[in-house]
View 1: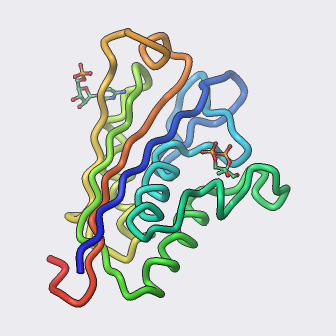
View 2: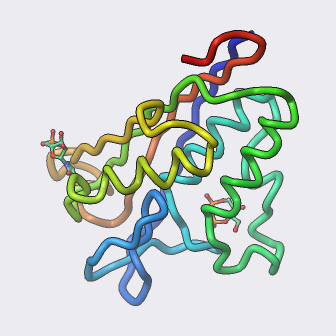
Length: 162
Ligand SMILES: Nc1ccn([C@@H]2O[C@H](COP(=O)(O)O)[C@@H](O)[C@H]2O)c(=O)n1
Ligand SMILES: C[C@@]1(CO)OP(=O)(O)OP(=O)(O)OC[C@H]1O
């Protein structure tokens, strides 16, 4: 069995917040605003997994009205989402994700993000692809008002996962 899921998330960039993306703290003058640590990439990946499982989205499982998730570590949320996949017998086929940000430059941090994500999804780093693009200074990402991320995931069950 193969299941495919898609995730998309956006968070606003503001002063006075750490910039945590893909579980990596990136040195930058601004950070992402949210109820949790606002890790836009991990949220998109979590949503893609929930989508593949037919289990809705992270807002349904970890509501932003629940104080338990205030400043939550999104890596812990992703790990909880992965438990849901593993309990249904799925393994990761692959995940392909894109960070949409004018700044900061993501490239130096992408290998570390891939390691963090692979560990959380009980997978090899070769199964995780993270990339980044600007929007050529167009739109809210191009103006540096926020960062978006998209993810597509393939989950496999009952067959070779590689
Ligand atoms: N925040 C970003 C955005 C892009 N990159 C890398 O730069 C390459 C060129 O970006 P374009 O938007 O001009 O296509 C892109 O392929 C990424 O490798 C980045 O590291 N951080
Ligand atoms: C992660 C949660 C929960 O803390 O909050 P935020 O950090 O605001 O993130 P978002 O992607 O807007 O929605 C999911 C929320 O339920």
